Length: 401
Image 1 (cartoon, rainbow, N blue to C red):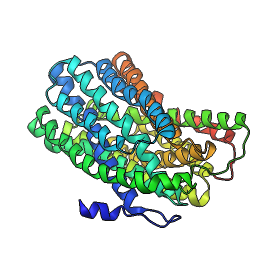
Image 2 (tube, one colour):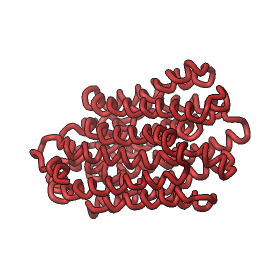
Image 3 (cartoon, rainbow, N blue to C red):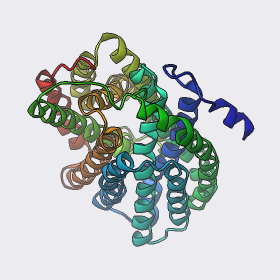
Image 4 (tube, rainbow, N blue to C red):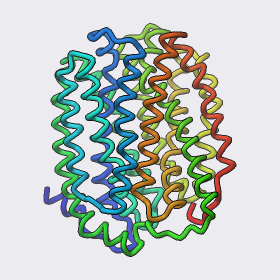
């Protein structure tokens, strides 16, 4: 614990506090790994509880909507009254959620466990994104990428952990992973102390970027936010098609085993993690609008090819899609934070929450599509979602972007 506290010692006012960012990224890894265990065990739950694709989609919807509705509210409250200890406190919801899921042998308990997981994310994401902004110095894109790549890495590790542990020892082994929430709680306690004693001072003096001057008309700001949310919609509904149903698609179309399908999902999510690292720094260097253009539209040729690809080409195509799509989110979040200075928590909560919500709605709708028209139709429809990226032409050009 002393080592952690040492890593979080106050940096120079304009320096990037890499110790803080590393700590919050590590906790993001733990948080999202725990969260991703739920979709990773869908094949088990479908068999053991006799669930339909629609019921699986509803589980994802409950989890995602619990997080998405609460996140902007948590962020807005924290903008007015910062609460450093909310960070360690939020991990207890994730711990409780996994304990419930480990013993869930009815559909009702499954929904309760999913909602508790969502509540954990609803507290963690807006406040931890604020900490990343506080610790960024002048390198907002880099800090946001480093923070988010922890989450992407955790999402990638979830299916791998499920394939290695849950598939072998069953649903009750989720209780073991719940113990990782206690480790995250201890780290976040120290981050909360840095937040209280140094991070808030950065915000009050403008060092955390909260008071960056962006002089744009209100109409353009609202229009820019609307475009960014539309891009989030296209990105996260497409990602929901892969995170929730890719294993079923591979099993159905290519007759692979559950373990092989989980490894394919892990490879895709690992590509998402790698892509996230590049999005923020590239936005710092070349402009966030250019990165947003590339990251949404650039995936379109590959998403159009995916429904027609063989098993051999499906792997490389999903890796390319993950790499390109993932570069969007850090650039989108920082672009939005620059558009609305002084509302870091609310904007972070809005975009993280909206991404969760769209993922949940997308999973529920796509589950209905899979039940009615077959799992392959899901990817035939979703192939066109990145075309929404053409809306990026409507984004304003604030000096901060």
